[in-house]
Length: 80
Image (cartoon, rainbow, N blue to C red; front, side):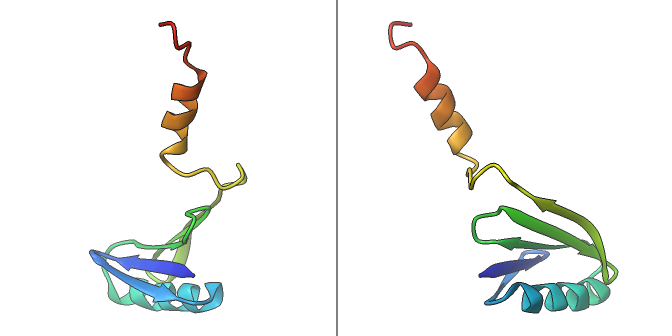
């Protein structure tokens, strides 16, 4: 599933193609940037005025934002 965020509203789409088509359309109508991302937030797009502004694909194996803190805590010496 892909999520399209327009301002404070979020819309769900079953396919990547449907989400991209909607984001292009929303970005023409909406003054700001429209964000598209998959559920795992590995793939992210931003659209502005109907055109792709940025694209990011995280290849680090599905790490989530909280993983960095967990890894830092795991690497600490428990005697500290």
